[in-house]
Length: 240
Image 1 (cartoon, one colour):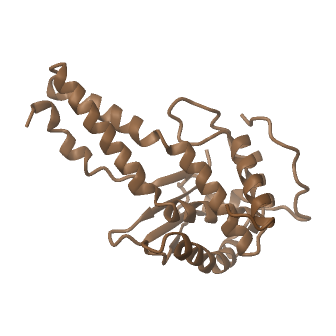
Image 2 (tube, helix red, strand yellow; image 1 turned 60 degrees about the vertical axis):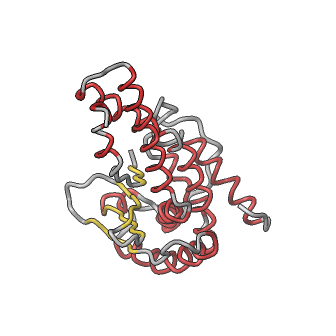
């Protein structure tokens, strides 16, 4: 084995989660009238949404990805030092895990917003994003390792090159994956009886990532339009 390729073994074990941190606002379409009493959501609101959303997410998962484990595990992180965040991962048995921080719950203003974010995280699993991102990271690391070997880089330099190319590979599809999760998540929320358009108003409040090079999330305006388009197709009886 070429010395420059040794770090690849560690990178091949790379484990990624589809994290969606609620991290200046871009121009957005005209807002929808807010609910009559928009106020911080509570743990009780979260539990009620989960009770409705989890079986629907399971059903959509079985319809679209019957090869996957569709028994969602939902966790609420109530540690006071955790920032607003929601993410999807898988446990050691491949079961999908959706986690919210309680600080995020307090940032949301309606069950529709909780439902849309829940649907988005469930959609990452349904669309099988984690292994797809891992494959891209491995490919990037391999290409970086080969390039490092060709130029005769030492182990330390090769490790840096491979880490950078793994990141590029992993993030290459991050934005398309986020938009795909927005589309599928909107459908899940709608099927559970929530208003995904009202839920998408959260994109008017969270910090906008813009359109940064190698950024992991699309601009908020693009995500809002994606949800609006998916809801229009779903309500018209068209496939999403």
